[in-house]
Image (cartoon, rainbow, N blue to C red; front, side):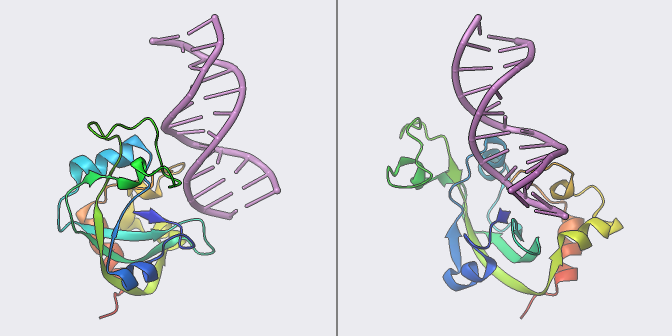
Length: 149
DNA sequence: GCCAACGTTGGC
DNA sequence: GCCAACGTTGGC
């Protein structure tokens, strides 16, 4: 799951412990949250649009998907006037903090790692803020990152 | 339903 | 700040 650290970083997640992943306004990304994610699933927390893009830590899916409250909040940047209460368009899951990497796993390092071949998030032109990750790819990144205990 | 125009993402 | 990639919009 991608986030711009200026907006919300792994350190922010460490501080709050758990955060609704609000503001996703892309149908494919929504579908992954709503239809694929299960409580307990591992999350690679990726920092995008920053000096050194890469995975900076781990999270865990903490809830099933539920309607994103910000879509109904007229004062929110994520307000969607088209969305109906009885038929919400956008969903979130809560993400719980699961550790910060001692060494961030940079995008460069991931691209150079043959063990991460085929990882969707690394595909050229990929702009999806949420992509599914193979179990083996998750394990590899987690091992490279060496989470603090 | 096609597709040009436009907007957004995100690495560089 | 540039620009490739790709999603969305809207005229037809």
